[in-house]
Length: 368
Image (cartoon, rainbow, N blue to C red; front, side, top):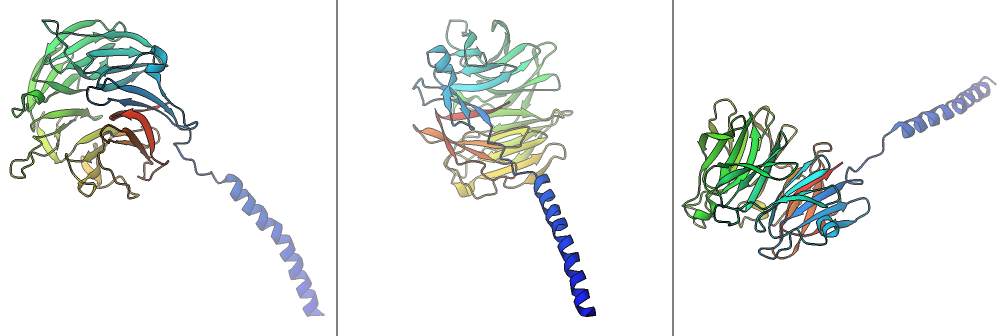
Protein backbone atom coordinates (compact mmCIF):
# COMPACT_ATOMS: atom_id res chain seq x y z
CA UNK A 1 0.00 0.00 0.00
CA UNK A 2 2.77 2.35 0.82
CA UNK A 3 4.40 1.56 -2.49
CA UNK A 4 1.19 2.24 -4.45
CA UNK A 5 0.60 5.49 -2.60
CA UNK A 6 4.15 6.64 -3.33
CA UNK A 7 3.76 5.88 -7.04
CA UNK A 8 0.46 7.77 -7.22
CA UNK A 9 1.98 10.84 -5.54
CA UNK A 10 4.97 10.73 -7.93
CA UNK A 11 2.68 10.42 -10.94
CA UNK A 12 0.62 13.40 -9.77
CA UNK A 13 3.77 15.49 -9.26
CA UNK A 14 5.08 14.52 -12.66
CA UNK A 15 1.77 15.46 -14.31
CA UNK A 16 1.87 18.86 -12.62
CA UNK A 17 5.43 19.42 -13.75
CA UNK A 18 4.85 18.65 -17.44
CA UNK A 19 2.91 21.77 -18.36
CA UNK A 20 5.39 23.87 -16.44
CA UNK A 21 8.25 22.50 -18.53
CA UNK A 22 6.23 22.89 -21.70
CA UNK A 23 5.36 26.48 -20.81
CA UNK A 24 9.03 27.26 -20.24
CA UNK A 25 9.93 25.90 -23.69
CA UNK A 26 7.15 27.94 -25.29
CA UNK A 27 8.45 31.13 -23.67
CA UNK A 28 11.95 30.47 -24.91
CA UNK A 29 10.64 29.95 -28.44
CA UNK A 30 8.59 33.13 -28.26
CA UNK A 31 11.44 35.32 -27.01
CA UNK A 32 14.15 33.93 -29.29
CA UNK A 33 14.90 36.39 -32.07
CA UNK A 34 14.73 34.84 -35.54
CA UNK A 35 17.85 34.99 -37.69
CA UNK A 36 17.67 38.06 -39.92
CA UNK A 37 19.54 38.31 -43.20
CA UNK A 38 20.50 41.98 -43.64
CA UNK A 39 20.30 41.52 -47.41
CA UNK A 40 16.57 40.68 -47.32
CA UNK A 41 15.49 44.32 -47.57
CA UNK A 42 18.68 45.86 -48.92
CA UNK A 43 18.72 48.41 -51.74
CA UNK A 44 21.95 49.06 -53.62
CA UNK A 45 23.03 51.69 -56.11
CA UNK A 46 25.77 50.42 -58.41
CA UNK A 47 27.95 52.63 -60.59
CA UNK A 48 29.07 50.81 -63.74
CA UNK A 49 31.91 52.42 -65.68
CA UNK A 50 30.99 50.63 -68.90
CA UNK A 51 33.18 48.95 -71.50
CA UNK A 52 36.15 50.81 -72.94
CA UNK A 53 34.96 53.53 -75.33
CA UNK A 54 31.55 51.84 -75.59
CA UNK A 55 29.59 54.76 -74.10
CA UNK A 56 27.55 52.41 -71.90
CA UNK A 57 28.14 53.57 -68.33
CA UNK A 58 25.09 53.11 -66.09
CA UNK A 59 23.70 53.73 -62.62
CA UNK A 60 21.70 50.71 -61.51
CA UNK A 61 19.29 50.63 -58.56
CA UNK A 62 18.97 47.06 -57.26
CA UNK A 63 16.18 46.11 -54.83
CA UNK A 64 17.10 42.76 -53.28
CA UNK A 65 13.63 42.32 -51.79
CA UNK A 66 11.93 42.39 -55.21
CA UNK A 67 14.82 41.55 -57.50
CA UNK A 68 14.25 44.73 -59.53
CA UNK A 69 17.29 46.17 -61.29
CA UNK A 70 16.83 49.55 -63.02
CA UNK A 71 19.25 51.90 -64.75
CA UNK A 72 17.81 54.99 -63.08
CA UNK A 73 19.70 57.50 -65.21
CA UNK A 74 18.51 55.95 -68.47
CA UNK A 75 14.96 55.54 -67.16
CA UNK A 76 14.53 59.11 -65.91
CA UNK A 77 16.47 61.00 -68.59
CA UNK A 78 15.87 58.81 -71.66
CA UNK A 79 19.56 58.90 -72.47
CA UNK A 80 22.75 57.17 -71.39
CA UNK A 81 25.07 58.31 -68.63
CA UNK A 82 28.05 58.41 -70.99
CA UNK A 83 31.52 56.93 -71.38
CA UNK A 84 33.59 55.75 -68.40
CA UNK A 85 31.77 56.74 -65.20
CA UNK A 86 34.33 56.99 -62.43
CA UNK A 87 33.03 58.19 -59.07
CA UNK A 88 29.72 58.36 -57.18
CA UNK A 89 28.82 60.39 -54.10
CA UNK A 90 25.57 60.74 -52.16
CA UNK A 91 24.57 63.92 -50.34
CA UNK A 92 21.07 63.81 -48.85
CA UNK A 93 18.66 63.01 -51.68
CA UNK A 94 21.17 63.91 -54.39
CA UNK A 95 23.87 61.96 -56.19
CA UNK A 96 27.00 63.27 -57.90
CA UNK A 97 28.70 61.28 -60.67
CA UNK A 98 31.85 61.91 -62.69
CA UNK A 99 31.91 60.50 -66.23
CA UNK A 100 35.53 60.76 -67.30
CA UNK A 101 35.60 60.24 -71.06
CA UNK A 102 32.35 62.15 -71.55
CA UNK A 103 33.84 65.04 -69.52
CA UNK A 104 30.75 65.30 -67.32
CA UNK A 105 30.14 65.98 -63.62
CA UNK A 106 26.42 65.46 -63.02
CA UNK A 107 24.11 66.18 -60.12
CA UNK A 108 21.10 63.87 -59.93
CA UNK A 109 17.92 63.73 -57.90
CA UNK A 110 16.90 60.68 -55.91
CA UNK A 111 15.20 59.04 -58.89
CA UNK A 112 18.16 59.68 -61.21
CA UNK A 113 16.80 62.83 -62.82
CA UNK A 114 19.52 65.17 -64.11
CA UNK A 115 19.39 68.40 -62.09
CA UNK A 116 22.60 70.12 -63.23
CA UNK A 117 25.95 69.32 -64.78
CA UNK A 118 29.38 70.76 -65.42
CA UNK A 119 31.58 70.17 -68.48
CA UNK A 120 34.88 71.84 -67.56
CA UNK A 121 37.50 72.46 -70.25
CA UNK A 122 41.13 73.50 -70.38
CA UNK A 123 42.48 76.79 -71.72
CA UNK A 124 42.01 75.74 -75.34
CA UNK A 125 38.59 74.16 -74.87
CA UNK A 126 39.73 70.56 -74.46
CA UNK A 127 38.20 68.13 -71.96
CA UNK A 128 39.75 67.86 -68.47
CA UNK A 129 38.37 64.35 -67.81
CA UNK A 130 37.04 64.56 -64.21
CA UNK A 131 37.88 61.60 -61.98
CA UNK A 132 37.29 61.60 -58.20
CA UNK A 133 35.32 63.88 -55.84
CA UNK A 134 34.82 64.98 -52.24
CA UNK A 135 32.13 67.24 -50.79
CA UNK A 136 32.74 69.82 -48.08
CA UNK A 137 30.88 72.93 -46.98
CA UNK A 138 28.65 73.10 -50.04
CA UNK A 139 31.61 72.72 -52.39
CA UNK A 140 32.49 69.83 -54.68
CA UNK A 141 36.21 69.23 -55.16
CA UNK A 142 36.98 67.22 -58.31
CA UNK A 143 40.28 65.97 -59.73
CA UNK A 144 40.79 67.01 -63.37
CA UNK A 145 42.96 64.27 -64.86
CA UNK A 146 44.12 65.99 -68.05
CA UNK A 147 44.25 69.46 -66.53
CA UNK A 148 46.52 68.47 -63.59
CA UNK A 149 44.23 70.36 -61.24
CA UNK A 150 41.41 70.19 -58.73
CA UNK A 151 38.20 71.99 -59.67
CA UNK A 152 36.15 73.73 -56.99
CA UNK A 153 32.43 73.69 -57.82
CA UNK A 154 29.35 75.04 -56.09
CA UNK A 155 27.56 71.79 -55.19
CA UNK A 156 24.15 73.40 -55.65
CA UNK A 157 24.59 75.08 -59.06
CA UNK A 158 27.53 73.01 -60.37
CA UNK A 159 29.27 76.23 -61.42
CA UNK A 160 33.06 76.17 -61.16
CA UNK A 161 34.48 78.71 -58.70
CA UNK A 162 38.18 77.98 -58.82
CA UNK A 163 40.85 75.66 -60.15
CA UNK A 164 43.82 74.55 -58.02
CA UNK A 165 46.94 73.26 -59.85
CA UNK A 166 48.32 69.99 -58.41
CA UNK A 167 50.63 67.24 -59.71
CA UNK A 168 50.52 65.26 -62.93
CA UNK A 169 47.34 63.34 -63.78
CA UNK A 170 45.54 63.45 -60.42
CA UNK A 171 43.29 60.52 -59.51
CA UNK A 172 41.95 59.99 -55.96
CA UNK A 173 41.11 62.73 -53.48
CA UNK A 174 40.17 62.67 -49.80
CA UNK A 175 39.72 65.13 -46.93
CA UNK A 176 41.37 65.13 -43.48
CA UNK A 177 42.70 67.70 -41.01
CA UNK A 178 40.97 70.55 -42.90
CA UNK A 179 43.06 69.57 -45.92
CA UNK A 180 42.61 67.78 -49.21
CA UNK A 181 45.00 64.99 -50.19
CA UNK A 182 45.31 64.42 -53.93
CA UNK A 183 47.01 61.40 -55.54
CA UNK A 184 49.12 62.47 -58.52
CA UNK A 185 49.47 59.28 -60.55
CA UNK A 186 51.40 60.59 -63.54
CA UNK A 187 49.56 57.75 -65.24
CA UNK A 188 49.69 59.03 -68.80
CA UNK A 189 53.46 59.63 -68.64
CA UNK A 190 54.36 55.90 -68.63
CA UNK A 191 56.96 54.82 -67.63
CA UNK A 192 57.58 58.12 -65.83
CA UNK A 193 54.86 57.67 -63.21
CA UNK A 194 54.10 60.26 -60.55
CA UNK A 195 54.91 59.61 -56.91
CA UNK A 196 53.39 62.50 -54.95
CA UNK A 197 50.39 63.50 -52.87
CA UNK A 198 49.45 67.19 -53.09
CA UNK A 199 48.14 68.64 -49.82
CA UNK A 200 45.64 71.49 -50.19
CA UNK A 201 44.76 73.74 -47.24
CA UNK A 202 40.99 74.16 -47.35
CA UNK A 203 41.10 77.56 -45.65
CA UNK A 204 43.16 79.04 -48.50
CA UNK A 205 42.48 76.45 -51.25
CA UNK A 206 46.16 76.36 -52.15
CA UNK A 207 48.76 73.56 -52.16
CA UNK A 208 50.82 73.80 -48.98
CA UNK A 209 52.77 70.53 -49.07
CA UNK A 210 53.83 67.69 -51.38
CA UNK A 211 54.42 64.19 -49.97
CA UNK A 212 56.38 61.47 -51.75
CA UNK A 213 54.92 57.95 -51.92
CA UNK A 214 55.37 54.81 -54.04
CA UNK A 215 54.95 55.44 -57.78
CA UNK A 216 51.52 55.65 -59.43
CA UNK A 217 49.30 56.58 -56.46
CA UNK A 218 45.60 56.32 -57.34
CA UNK A 219 43.47 55.83 -54.19
CA UNK A 220 43.49 57.93 -51.01
CA UNK A 221 41.22 57.40 -47.97
CA UNK A 222 41.20 59.09 -44.56
CA UNK A 223 40.38 57.56 -41.17
CA UNK A 224 38.62 59.21 -38.21
CA UNK A 225 41.93 60.38 -36.72
CA UNK A 226 43.13 62.11 -39.87
CA UNK A 227 45.63 59.52 -41.06
CA UNK A 228 45.55 59.12 -44.84
CA UNK A 229 45.96 55.75 -46.56
CA UNK A 230 47.36 55.58 -50.09
CA UNK A 231 47.23 52.81 -52.68
CA UNK A 232 49.91 53.08 -55.37
CA UNK A 233 49.55 50.78 -58.37
CA UNK A 234 53.27 50.56 -59.11
CA UNK A 235 54.62 49.89 -62.62
CA UNK A 236 52.74 46.76 -63.84
CA UNK A 237 56.04 45.14 -64.82
CA UNK A 238 56.04 41.48 -65.91
CA UNK A 239 59.64 41.16 -64.73
CA UNK A 240 59.85 40.22 -61.04
CA UNK A 241 63.23 41.92 -60.79
CA UNK A 242 61.84 45.32 -61.81
CA UNK A 243 58.26 45.00 -60.55
CA UNK A 244 56.96 47.70 -58.22
CA UNK A 245 53.80 46.02 -56.84
CA UNK A 246 50.52 47.54 -55.67
CA UNK A 247 51.46 49.11 -52.32
CA UNK A 248 49.49 50.33 -49.29
CA UNK A 249 50.97 53.23 -47.29
CA UNK A 250 49.83 55.48 -44.43
CA UNK A 251 50.49 59.21 -44.01
CA UNK A 252 50.57 60.19 -40.33
CA UNK A 253 48.10 62.98 -39.50
CA UNK A 254 50.52 64.88 -37.26
CA UNK A 255 53.95 64.35 -38.78
CA UNK A 256 52.95 63.71 -42.44
CA UNK A 257 55.51 60.89 -42.40
CA UNK A 258 54.83 57.88 -44.63
CA UNK A 259 54.83 54.24 -43.47
CA UNK A 260 54.41 51.21 -45.72
CA UNK A 261 51.84 48.71 -44.44
CA UNK A 262 52.23 46.13 -47.19
CA UNK A 263 50.48 45.46 -50.47
CA UNK A 264 47.06 46.75 -51.45
CA UNK A 265 44.90 47.21 -54.54
CA UNK A 266 41.42 48.23 -53.33
CA UNK A 267 40.64 49.84 -49.98
CA UNK A 268 37.73 51.34 -48.09
CA UNK A 269 37.48 52.62 -44.50
CA UNK A 270 34.32 52.11 -42.43
CA UNK A 271 33.87 52.37 -38.65
CA UNK A 272 37.61 52.58 -37.94
CA UNK A 273 38.36 49.52 -40.03
CA UNK A 274 40.33 49.54 -43.25
CA UNK A 275 39.32 46.76 -45.65
CA UNK A 276 42.03 45.91 -48.16
CA UNK A 277 42.03 43.63 -51.18
CA UNK A 278 45.41 42.86 -52.67
CA UNK A 279 44.93 41.53 -56.20
CA UNK A 280 47.98 42.34 -58.31
CA UNK A 281 47.29 42.52 -62.07
CA UNK A 282 47.06 38.98 -63.50
CA UNK A 283 47.21 37.40 -60.03
CA UNK A 284 45.37 34.15 -59.31
CA UNK A 285 42.77 33.69 -56.60
CA UNK A 286 45.39 31.88 -54.51
CA UNK A 287 47.58 34.99 -54.55
CA UNK A 288 44.83 37.44 -53.48
CA UNK A 289 44.51 38.73 -49.92
CA UNK A 290 41.51 40.16 -48.08
CA UNK A 291 42.70 42.00 -44.98
CA UNK A 292 41.29 44.22 -42.25
CA UNK A 293 43.35 46.83 -40.37
CA UNK A 294 42.13 48.56 -37.22
CA UNK A 295 42.84 52.24 -37.89
CA UNK A 296 42.68 53.06 -34.16
CA UNK A 297 45.28 50.54 -33.04
CA UNK A 298 47.06 50.54 -36.42
CA UNK A 299 47.21 46.74 -36.26
CA UNK A 300 45.99 44.09 -38.68
CA UNK A 301 42.81 42.38 -37.40
CA UNK A 302 42.25 39.81 -40.10
CA UNK A 303 44.26 38.10 -42.82
CA UNK A 304 41.12 37.00 -44.64
CA UNK A 305 37.74 38.69 -44.23
CA UNK A 306 36.21 36.24 -46.73
CA UNK A 307 35.70 33.15 -44.55
CA UNK A 308 33.46 30.88 -46.64
CA UNK A 309 35.98 29.94 -49.33
CA UNK A 310 34.61 32.23 -52.07
CA UNK A 311 37.23 33.06 -54.71
CA UNK A 312 37.44 35.77 -57.35
CA UNK A 313 39.03 36.10 -60.77
CA UNK A 314 39.23 39.92 -60.78
CA UNK A 315 37.75 41.86 -57.84
CA UNK A 316 36.88 45.32 -59.11
CA UNK A 317 35.17 47.12 -56.24
CA UNK A 318 35.08 47.05 -52.43
CA UNK A 319 32.36 48.72 -50.35
CA UNK A 320 31.08 48.13 -46.80
CA UNK A 321 27.72 49.02 -45.23
CA UNK A 322 28.38 51.11 -42.09
CA UNK A 323 25.19 49.84 -40.41
CA UNK A 324 25.29 46.09 -40.96
CA UNK A 325 28.94 45.51 -41.83
CA UNK A 326 27.86 43.82 -45.08
CA UNK A 327 30.63 43.70 -47.68
CA UNK A 328 30.01 44.20 -51.41
CA UNK A 329 32.57 43.06 -53.98
CA UNK A 330 32.03 43.20 -57.75
CA UNK A 331 33.93 40.74 -59.92
CA UNK A 332 35.08 42.03 -63.32
CA UNK A 333 34.89 40.05 -66.55
CA UNK A 334 35.88 41.78 -69.78
CA UNK A 335 32.93 42.70 -72.04
CA UNK A 336 30.46 40.88 -69.81
CA UNK A 337 28.03 42.27 -67.27
CA UNK A 338 29.60 41.88 -63.84
CA UNK A 339 28.69 39.81 -60.80
CA UNK A 340 28.12 41.28 -57.33
CA UNK A 341 28.92 39.29 -54.18
CA UNK A 342 27.44 40.24 -50.81
CA UNK A 343 29.00 38.98 -47.58
CA UNK A 344 28.07 39.32 -43.93
CA UNK A 345 30.41 41.09 -41.53
CA UNK A 346 31.62 37.56 -40.68
CA UNK A 347 32.63 36.97 -44.31
CA UNK A 348 29.93 34.56 -45.44
CA UNK A 349 27.75 35.01 -48.52
CA UNK A 350 24.38 36.57 -47.68
CA UNK A 351 22.75 35.80 -51.05
CA UNK A 352 23.65 34.03 -54.25
CA UNK A 353 25.95 36.23 -56.38
CA UNK A 354 23.89 38.22 -58.88
CA UNK A 355 24.27 40.12 -62.14
CA UNK A 356 24.63 43.90 -61.83
CA UNK A 357 23.44 44.25 -65.46
CA UNK A 358 26.26 46.72 -65.92
CA UNK A 359 29.77 46.58 -67.31
CA UNK A 360 32.88 47.25 -65.22
CA UNK A 361 30.93 47.60 -61.95
CA UNK A 362 33.06 49.88 -59.81
CA UNK A 363 31.22 51.32 -56.80
CA UNK A 364 28.29 50.24 -54.61
CA UNK A 365 26.22 52.48 -52.31
CA UNK A 366 24.12 50.92 -49.56
CA UNK A 367 20.92 53.00 -49.48
CA UNK A 368 18.60 53.60 -46.50
